[in-house]
Length: 246
Image (cartoon, rainbow, N blue to C red; front, top):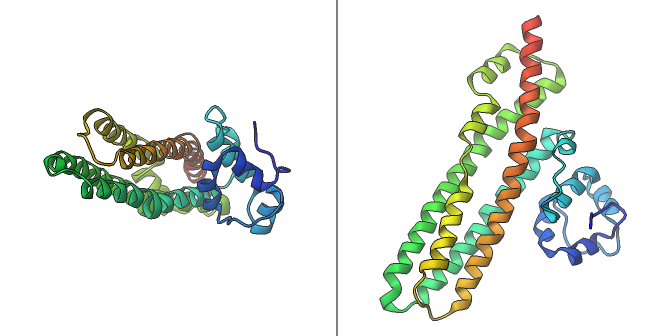
């Protein structure tokens, strides 16, 4: 079932509650009554078409309008990606860390060493994750927005061309590390090798949140790889071509 603009915003949460975390990335808060998606977006100054493409792509794994998403400004795409980073850093990663600490606090003394190994694996993953996000936030996204600004304003200065030559979006694509692989390893260790614990529901909570994070990361990476990268690449090509003709 595809989500459309005339649908009440409340209905999409009943259809798929996991969309709550996506809606909040647009700074939409609960309490919107019976307003439609279009009414809520208009009131918040949100491009309803962009909102619908993001929500539908998250809702239906088989629906991914990469060509349609490329029609939106990079500013909108980057703002959404930054909101997902904020969600990972402020909500999801701390939540998983809290559950793992609960697991340690409720462990039998004989199992503590094995559980500490799991905790260290998670801490290593968290550090790798933070490094990944820091690079995107402080280097890649700022570069992307600078390219878009030059492209839209037609201010094709040589320093922008030099930046493109020194670091293009293809460099980002080549070095784009797959942080989902290590996340899969962490899930696998817990599923296959976790020693007996006092509270199995803590383990279930950890795995549930790891699977949710993995799904979210896959969607995040898909936007970067199939929308952000091709759009920036086309702008880079146009900028270099214009400067060459001068």
